[in-house]
Amino acid sequence: MMDLTQPQWVKHVIFHPFEGYEDLRWKKGGTLKYTAVIIFALFVALIAWDRWCGFQFRPLPDVLFSVVPYLMKSLVYFGAWCVGNWAVCTLLDGEGTLKNITIYSSYALIPYIVCTFVNVVLSHLLVTDEAVFFYTIHYIGLLWTALLLFNAVKAVHQYSITKTVAAIALTICAMLIILFLAVLFLSLFQKVYVFFYSLYTEIVYRIQV
Image (cartoon, rainbow, N blue to C red; front, side):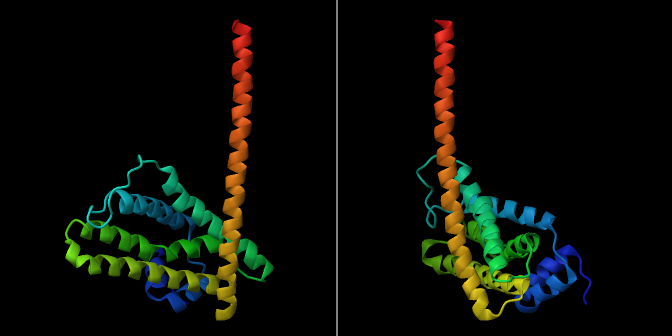
């Protein structure tokens, strides 16, 4: 088996998606440190895509800047994907651990992140008539990441192609359930917080009076 450094493993997986993940699985080459860096890069890329692109390609949103939506799109969505896939594939006799699912899935995001940063730079160099190059790079990043994600699920759980498709579909359903429960929990927490804060304010007011 090949003996690669961590950057070489990342490169091997990205440019050899079919055998790269299989090699990564048997050699146990991934680390959570790189996953953390990749998710942070995704967070920055999403901000750059919305806020730093040339106005002719991505008009600046009217709403005030807030990191919360970008944390949702990067950390929360990614976490929901990993937990959802682990939960679903545990029932489908998948072999992947939550750690490996997290590592393999994060590596799959690299093409999308890189293409996003490339487009941010190109958006200030291209004119509107050259938008085809801008959107071509964008969709290449999306399709490349989708291909890597598919192979990540297939390799980490040792599934057939048909079972991988079913696992991904069920994972998306699990993500929706997880996100719905998270929103429900946050809404309930907010109401409880408002109740106790109002109670505390009323008690303090009565004491002072």
